[in-house]
Image 1: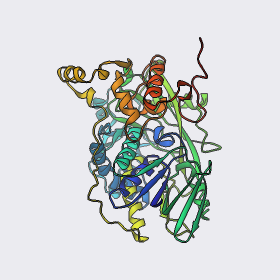
Image 2 (image 1 turned 180 degrees about the horizontal axis):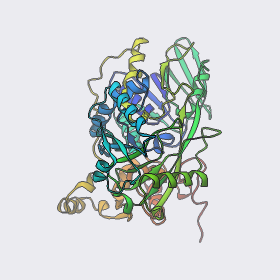
Image 3 (image 1 turned 180 degrees about the vertical axis):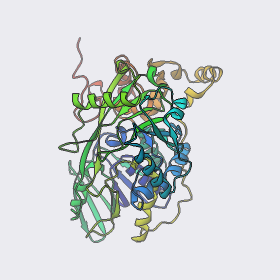
Image 4 (image 1 turned 90 degrees about the vertical axis):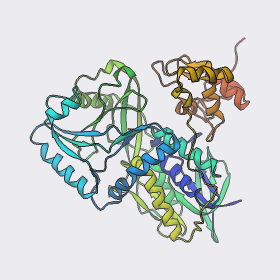
Length: 478
């Protein structure tokens, strides 16, 4: 089969581009090198919806951020992705940093951002009593918010699949060749996929994919962001997302509630050797702790439940790359999508498809397209009476597998079967939060493995943590 469009990379950008393409009468294939979607930066970022004050006016980042905020909130509602418009504060510590607050405010106005205000440290502390007494001036951005980035990716890909798109995981692209008007994309196992158009959404590896068709005009600079996630006991420490005045390295360390009521602190912004350098470090964790306490002194880091790191894909220009590849027909690079890429993802997808249309891709509307997705967390939102009635008919929803996050067997079974299906323990974790609580899967993992084995009809020895060689058991004893 020759697809109309092949999308490389199943992060939030690739997922949204694929979903956007299914609005038209097209055969679309999404390729991902890992065992699941959202396995790169899309599972390891702040989950912050940027208010749009920061990007340099006139850049693609500024345009996509401004256009993307409302589109993301609307799409999140359609896909039932957890999100909240909680607003953000950018904080200045003393008179030396206060001019930066005014500069950011003016930049936001130039970018078309509405509703911002500059308030004193005293006014900010009335809204956020835990803020440092050293904060003297604050930029208040009510349009900012928080969202679950990996659930957004899963929902986008799932919705695209429900509308006819094909997902191929464990497909590491090693070669791209063009003969006539057809691209042949080859994977590391020799498998091939053919398509007339290709969209490169490979994140930290997008320069390598681009080079396969002869465009080596950009080089990805990998920067690691390390985070500390705290228990829900700390989740109400602040209600806004708290930033410090940004530096040339990035927007600084944030202190933010998450949509799941934890507290998130980070990230660092350290250049790393490779795009796969996702280890956390003692130095990075120390930076996060110290700077988070600068903003919110009361944060109790004894409540840490996990740490993680994600690699953002930057380039020397500091802007997004969304354009036709140089010297390769019908090939679009969507690359260097670092912050505010998550906020911009829906706008970026629309822009990329618009470029494809200018390349003569037939964009005839798909009358069967349905942009909505049912709520995977419906059971949690029921009243006690509704839950009792539902469980009486569906007893598997009454058997709790993960006690920390109150996740039932029914929810896990759904996650294993629903597009895109979870094939490993971490896939179930991202879809249901099973294993994301204080014990980090210490108790529920064996039960999740048993369900994966049963539903997918594979031996327990073949159930992995995150695909490939991440085996959990090697055999039976006794």
